[in-house]
Image (cartoon, rainbow, N blue to C red):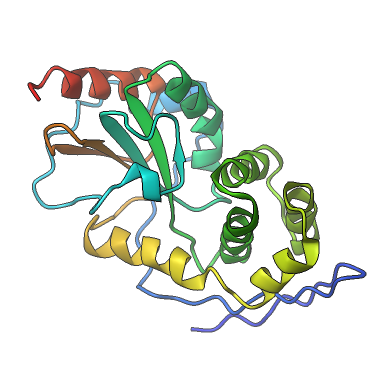
Length: 238
């Protein structure tokens, strides 16, 4: 499946959107009309703590080799599979950022799951990886924060967000135009399908590095619920 390039140019640097690859079949995505945190709470009330996963997994998780926010040596990693244009991750993103700040035993890992039907998913994912390649992981998260705050709807807006985060704009555009991060983005998506057996987007895997246990949250939820999961996992003997 090939999506025609989006004919957008940002003077004086011409921008061509890389072809959007489809590595695996799309997953079903449930999309109730949730618009804010209060509706998240109402929709998810009384959800039980997820049981320990027996089949699905985040796969190999090494926080020192991933896009990680928080303490890379934390006992628990929350591995988020998401696309960067969906309303659900955008709603809880600021809350999860605060959650990590007050939970030193937890870190947050972001993995890509772009959807071909959303024309900006792959371009934004590629641009974020290009920012990372030039400016590192802090810049990756700064760009991710900015995307969720502003929700760019075209290539020009996407580029404007990225430009202040790099020292060499020409290198950034070369990375993007040549789809340099394509394998990185698709590897995340393939891992989600093969190891994660994902059926809902976004999905969060809670990985306990001390016990090897994993639990999965399908879709979004409140930070109180996330805290309950972490507390439950921390009670298990190492």
